[in-house]
View (cartoon, one colour):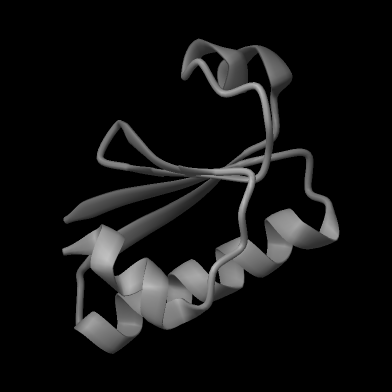
Length: 77
């Protein structure tokens, strides 16, 4: 099971990244857990200074962007 984390304050971009990530994971047929991390201290522990960000299994894959679902699929494989 993949652990997908969306790092951000809950802003519209963060919500859109979560939505697109969920679409990508479903399109790939992945078994996943999606967690939204809103605590700024927890976000900084990843070394992320700009949100939204996507973390896949503990590895930061995307920072400061909201790509379409198709582009996110490549990051989840």
